[in-house]
Length: 530
Image (cartoon, rainbow, N blue to C red; front, side, top):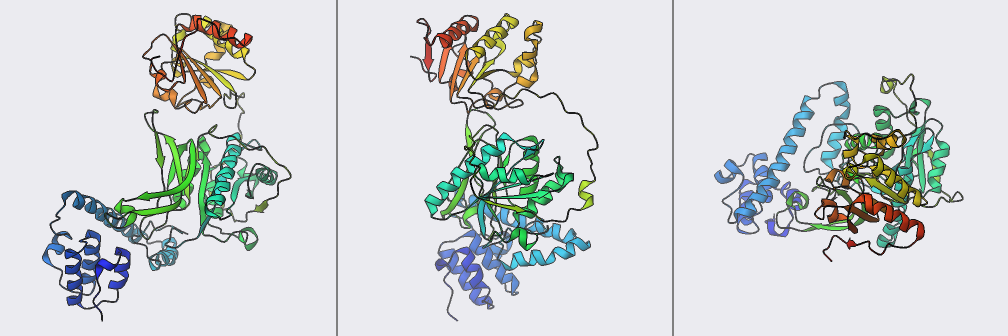
């Protein structure tokens, strides 16, 4: 048998080649060749494991630590991180598998063995129907369309519009036609599935059951995962030919956040939460956890880049769901902040496939039953307006008058509404009765309030706390009015007016009504000094 030259193989290829070697001396020669060649920690570990498997003698240095003295301390540290990650995950999963001794665990053994046969480099949790296998088939962008009161939420239509845009670009970039698939559930929701087609979906999969009228964690999760895995009768699944969706979008609502985490866990994949922008392109990475070899670069194709505000609120992070060696994480999924995208104009003549999903729903899933409820008065929805005027603590000198000035500016626009900061909600300001209702929490904008993205956002007397920025940073144009030239909001405003809101707001209102900018108004653009 010809001697294997490890320099000619990747670690995965070398692992396969070593399965044919049963001679300890030959394995020792391959190990020495690896040391004098690329000297990859992961490759040495693979050879060592093969030696142990055939009962061969493992060299002392490798037996004790699995590595030799590394000439490059920084490289050795990186390789060590990769080795630890692989081993820890594997041992944890094996422990969980051994702990499962009931009948359900026994029925799952076949699934786990199938994964190992497909070359998984490390086991995953022992759960039913895990399809995160090497060489899996994935396709389409799925969108969970949340409903309420028998209607699609606005954010569902917004996500469909964005998904349509992404998959049209996908077809142009890769020359492959993949679909936008809406999925939803509820009581008598076939009509809503058809509406999803009008708003951009190529296919809509729905599950109808009177018990699903309101969101329930367990059945919604089970049905969503069942749909995504393509399980069910032939009639409800023969329209697709892949294992799981390539991409999946959820709304970042209370129910959507809950469902997204549970479904992605069931599908054995990851999740980026509260995203405000999405795009698809290739990504080159060198992280050995993802490439399988230190110092090697790998290009991942068709990666969904999921952009979200970071915890400071002043920067954005882009989250990627990338595969590990021998392991595929699909669908690439995220939840989307309402108001981040525009829905497309509905085309009710648009053709698409509407599929009724078939699945047996277990009674145990409905252990929690909603027997009665009260409908609260309709709250204030600030999303969807062209203009938002937001008032902050700057009205503190005369709260009622400040509120009146804000409302007068709102009235000057055709499509505007009034918002407030949390500082107003938690303050002890006293408002006269005719404006008191505008100081309630339902109008709060920010991390713990509403998220808006109007064409024009006027922030009067707002300091610019990071929690508030999260709620309005996607606005097209931001105009700030503040007496403090160093106010934080200046850093992310398009126009900054240094002045007292009690003086500036009346002039701005008059300017909107007359269409003329007051001569003495002075603004600093882009937070600059000129």
